Amino acid sequence: MADLNKQRLIAKTLVKTPFQRGWQFRIELSNQPAEFDLFVKDVTFGPIEIETEPIKAGSHTLTFPVSAAPVSISMTMRDHIDERVYKWFEGLSKKVLNEDGTVNLPKDYCINWKRFIVLEDGSELPSNMAWQVYPTKLGDITESRDDDGFKEFPITFMQFRAS
Image (cartoon, rainbow, N blue to C red; front, side):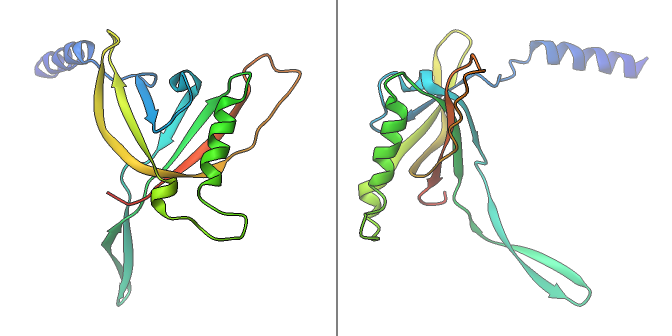
């Protein structure tokens, strides 16, 4: 009987718990195109990564933390008919590398990336995810006359400095 009561309490708690849903986010970037959030379909990132180093001790291997690794952020983007997202990302990318093979200073190409939590009532909470990032990849663009969906492509940013 005690197990049944415990399960009822757990079920009651689960029903009342406001779990965050996958769509409850908003991304904000420095100098982003107009209505940028409309074009962000999804975002994928691993907010914490600790690098380790293995050390052999006889027949065993021990690992020790050595540093924090920068975060990679990928976003699947939809684009406007005027290709404003593509052109914006292309412009950011051109600030990183020069045609003569040199790399610019971080102050020239780093931008601010912030994630907000969107609540059911439309209000927002800032999350603890706010980083300086730079563009690293504009992924494959697929266009098809058989598809009735939106044109989409992935873009990737790298955190400038691990937190």
